[in-house]
Length: 315
Image (cartoon, rainbow, N blue to C red; front, side):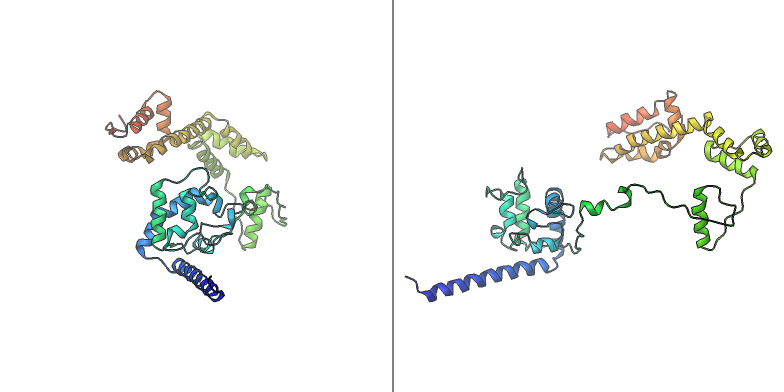
């Protein structure tokens, strides 16, 4: 029977081998990879990790499964509850490869469906290369609770309106905020526009046309406190404003429906070059609504992919 000394020697040798393997793994993972290794990781490994692994072992997972984070080199090097998932240079000794191969009924990753054989082969090749990982940033640990602190996810709170005294410029609570900011910056409000300028600004902004002389005269002669409010109400209820608002709404939907087709590889780029301005031109929508089939032709050509739009934009 082997002596006790032999057993002690065997245990020492085993521990040394484990330490050497761990040191090689850490050294390989901490050493910056060469250009070829970094390119292989980013082209073959990183997309698979992002698409199939980050949901359970990434920054947005409420609790990374098995305590393992794969979305950073630091997390991959540290490992999880079972230690480091990779032994650099040795795919057969790496837990990650064992899980990807689906040979152990108790260790199958990703769960539900195995990766394609060629993808597993890429991971094996990556480990043989020393598991190069060019990622240097340390991902910030985020949780849903922290994400809910973002201002867009918070319930609006009515702020306290700043108190302004000794100035009649503020007419509304919004003016109070503006005036408070100007005062803090040691600035003064610009002088109020005269009534002729005011109605021209409002009319151009809302219907894109200048006011008539009668509209100017009526407004300048109206000395009631709500004279400008009546001008705005009249413009908002005018057919010109309703048409512009309606055209803008339909044009936006048309752009959302047509523009994504340009992302198709076969989509003739020349169509967008020749007609890009028409997608944002209100006349484009008006002509279509009046029976002009220009949008229909654009949709048909976009689906054709290999066709050429040879007709002139305006004919």
